[in-house]
Image 1 (cartoon, rainbow, N blue to C red):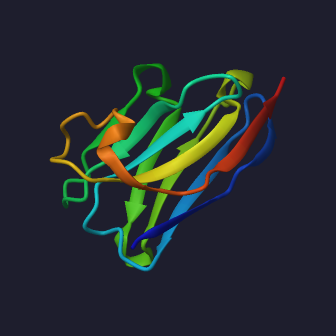
Image 2 (image 1 turned 45 degrees about the vertical axis):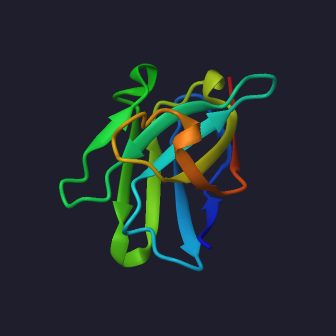
Length: 127
């Protein structure tokens, strides 16, 4: 079973940047479309971004995050990344990576379509 491990979270000032990483143990990520989600305190988990496993690396983003966040992957390193720029206090959340289990990109923004999840990495953006 694939186990996902997120890293790279931390405390950053508004306007700053962070790059989150998601690696896998017990399996390879190369055959999975991958997604990032986030959950702020007291709020439901929400979709952030997703990326195809195919060579075209097609990406999808939550509309509100386009232009600030970038998802990418390096299959040779078995790692998926989330580059976050121009961070805002409202980006404060726990960020999770997940492996997609359906027929991508159907319902790519629905967390029910993802079957393997990491434990998350916390991002705090101070004003």
